[in-house]
Image (cartoon, rainbow, N blue to C red; front, side, top):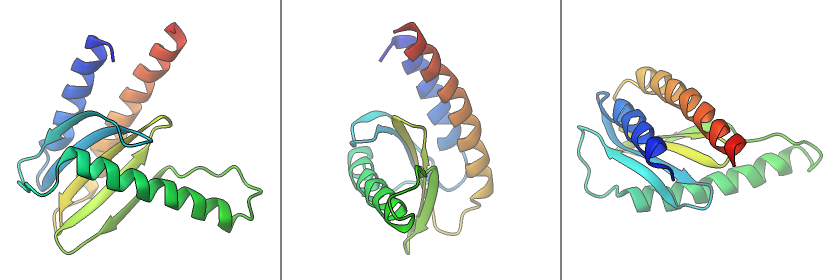
Length: 136
């Protein structure tokens, strides 16, 4: 990626990571390649960016197939966002087209501020990605 985009990405991911309860924030390709990551204040060594990216992108692909199956294969519905929880973490995913924004949050933490910041970051990143694609 371009150094300006890297700086914007780092700043954007850090803004999400700074929220209470956030463990890890990852920007990844749809096939699991990590473009950027930030560790939150809530620590969890077990959730590496690579592990989170690999597992959640697999879930994203599977959910996409389910969505297509539920629509009888006739719909062009696209998976935009989803979340699920385990005993220790809540996982939020936001599909930005060619990239996914993933956030792991400690179970019990307030999710609304995280969702709002994810939406703000996604809007800014989508504009930057569109500018890069237009320049290419």
